[in-house]
Length: 475
Ligand code: UTP
Image (cartoon, rainbow, N blue to C red):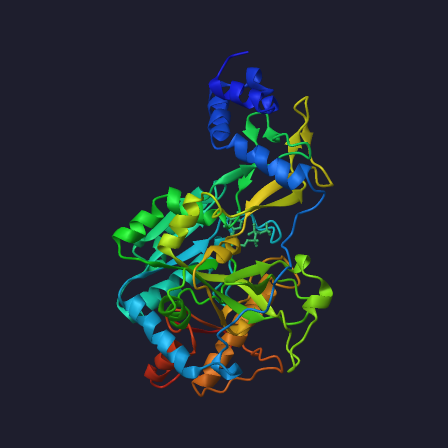
């Protein structure tokens, strides 16, 4: 057998099967396999196997010890302090005017539930013109840059699988009018999948079964890619983090940014009140000084049903994956070290692989384990974390599934309801059903308005305002 230092290293770690087909590979395939092997931290894989797979039948889960409901800045309409919100908003606007904020989208997921062939950000989501998720965000970011007199930097985390296609999509669409020098793509890291005895799986004779290391991998990818250094040299201190699948998201929200900055928080989060006790969302909780997210599957149902005196859920602060991160906090966590590293989670999956004879295996039951990092696991490490409430209808309607809940249909309808609310706020009557859904197909470009205030401002400038009619598209 031809020798390569990696082959010996893997053999010593009990992972010789990775190179089982070496003799059959071409020079290019060998080079590719070696490059993939070079991404793997064998000691880490061994540690994860021992702690997450070998030791326990299931996931260790989060301890429920000492958990209490977290403090939260309620919306003024739910009893929050309107003056504090106004002050926060002013602080956030000042940061935007100063160019201290960048948008950050995590777009490295595999999007298996949606089953769409392509990077999820390229999926068409808007109700009339069928704009892609990326275009919606691009226009919101462009509009905010214009409003505050400072174009924003936008960081987009991709995966190995979708990086080129994502970049190509932006190039093909001329970056949707954004300055391409301010749009930055970087790949997230990958982790190998292992079988239930800890052996690294091959996807093919020359390919290791590698998959993205989770949205929590964003912190180390920001660091490794040089994004944090670029932010520093550009005077950006704060990242506005959101997921690629949520067209309603406020890409940069001045009040949220302001609360974060005024409290000198290292990481802040938005929550929405859970719609019903069984809703499958992670829950914000407090433990001592730390803000933590407990997964719904880790909290007993009886606890999830506990109520306050007013009937609201005691543990009802749902995580919608919208965060603000301090640049240096991201650097500190990326560097890791004793006690500050994000924990990996285990997910049992059906992993396409090959058998010892090199024949394809397509299991119908989980045959292995993937390891992933979650970004909300950074919260307990953050100093002065802030949690604020947001209205679901104004910030959250993700496209996760092909049909049913959180699907293109529900997201499209939530966009339509939002547009109808803006029309109403501007004094334009629009027939809607009991759920607020307008009878007309309409769409508002974020360049015209991206929240109630910006919409109403633009609307008032129209002379005379157009009559809402079928297929109305405002730009
Ligand atoms: P999801 O948890 O919805 O996962 O990601 P997913 O991979 O996109 O979809 P499914 O589960 O296969 O259907 C939430 C967000 O985190 C990003 C996704 O792109 C999405 O914006 N993400 C997820 C990453 O950037 N990297 C990852 O490794 C995982």
